[in-house]
Image (cartoon, rainbow, N blue to C red; front, top):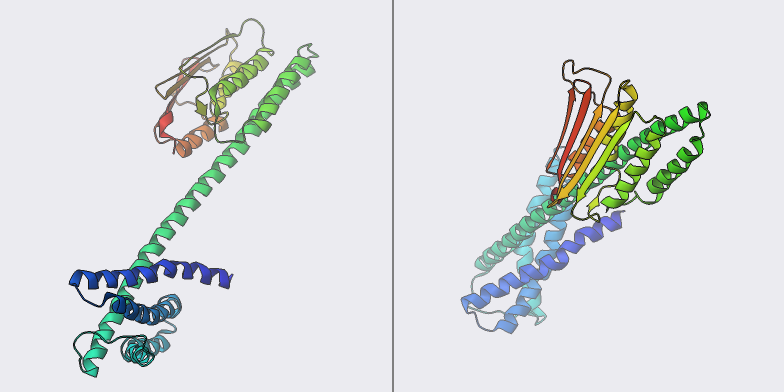
Length: 345
């Protein structure tokens, strides 16, 4: 792990060092300095030294400083000051001796030369430190954003893992009621349930699915629910879609339909009904589910089932522009969902 960490830190310097070298060369070009080939070699020789010192200072010495180790750190820092001044001067003289570094310009005293080189060294530290800070800040923001995305995806998966068993539990209750009454409709209900299970297992793993596929499953679910009731149950399901291939998160609309039967029709004794309307125009989705209930309006506070609670949270994670309203009236419950499909986050 330590070697991997060293490699990641070293990658920054692969382009940071040439960038510093290029900036200094461009400065010489702008100033109109002569002997550009020699200056390029001289710059390369100096950059090698300051880059090695900067890497040691910024990646190892400064990160290890702490209040507990403040005194040893204070003792180490002056050594870097010497390295950026006298050490850089000695490195320059070594280059001159090896005929790598070519003295250019007007000769100056040793003390002035050390001062010039120290300014060069301090400038390199500031450049490396600022770029390194900006780079690490960007990487940190990217990591935080990625962590947020992964966290939201995990929460979405958790919500789906709650919704699907809840949906299956209610469906199995329906089949159980038919089986207990020894109804001839039990085999048909099991067949419809198998179609729904196949859809949930093989079609809902991705983030999107064509709206027409979700509508087929809603049709199957409604047909499965109708098996429990006689002709007194009235169901009206209509849709107005510009394009049935438009994408939507799978089973996103199902909780509203399921809620209409479990908490509405099943509790209605007189003339139960469910009215469902879906329209999508110009990427604007409108889904209205209206059903009978067994309760009067009362205090007008609508009951929030597990499915509706999960749906509301999924919408928060999936879309920036949406509206989910539920209203409890006199023996009627209305859920209205509006989504700007273009606002998917």
